[in-house]
Amino acid sequence: MTSTTVTPPDRKRVQNSLTSGMLPRWVPPAIVAGILAVGLAAGLLFDVNLMLAAAFAVVGVGLVLTVVSRQVEGARRAKDRLVTVVVTSAFVLALLPLVSLLITVVQNGIERFDGEFLTQTMRGVLGEGGGAYHAIVGTLLITAAAAVISVPIGIMCAVYLVEYGRGRLARAVTLLVDVMTGIPSIVAGLFAFAMFAIFFGPSVRFGIGGAVALSVLMVPVVVRSSEEMLKLVPNELREASYALGVSKSRTVVKVVLRTAAAGIATGVTLAVARVIGETAPLLIIAGSTTRLNADLFEGRMSSLPIFTYYSYTIPGVPPEFGVDRAWAAALTLFVIVMLLNLVARAISRYFSLNSR
Image (cartoon, rainbow, N blue to C red):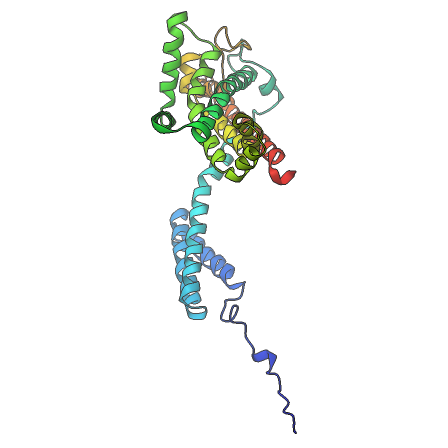
């Protein structure tokens, strides 16, 4: 009996169906770089708006890459590359205003962002010098007081809607929260002013009023973000807790809130970032001053948004010093918001279940 030896096929001729007919990795970046370079060069040579030239270059990248991919890879992968170009372009377009804002604020505010600006007030200063120490303290105090007022209310409201709320009352609360989300900030300031004017008269101006006005804006953001985080908690965790004989209230505190703590912390930070730059409510109820006032319940209290507004609109003579202080205050506010986001990330990582 003779045996037949099967000769294996040449490995060089065997192609993987998943990788055959694909463009080399360097081709898409080369096409993008080449067309963008040609578009920008044409814009510079023919005195065309660079933004318009970049837009035409992006369109050219999409067309050329799609045609080349269709010839080599087929229609499906060509569509995938076209969608990738569109999504990437949209991302870059959305990022441009943020980058431009950051660069503008840093360039204009870094000159006066120094120790004197952070440690001095504007009391007795008419021209050069002075700082925003009183406004920084006012911003931190008012925002902290607003968080103390709104965070417990928002979290408890979210717990009610997710764990207890049923029927018409829950639907009414949900509708009210949605309506409050779109309230203009100046309406919140007028509400706080009208409420405190009943008890203290129409000349009332103090920091706690600004905190109440900001809390009106913070509550719906905290409710919405906390509600979504609580809904993400698996029902199996609740059922396991109930099976062990734990009461519903203790389950909510020890299991549900503990599991959603990372997301709730992020939502609270977003709410703080939402209100820390508000100007209209504080302009109405908190007022403005050039001296340091750390008492929320007595006297006018300045804040960084109000300080920026008055420094830019009433810069004094010469106006350069006031404008520089306004940009430095804007940079200070940006730094505070960035630090708050870093703190929120740290809290989120600490409470995250994956960190345990």
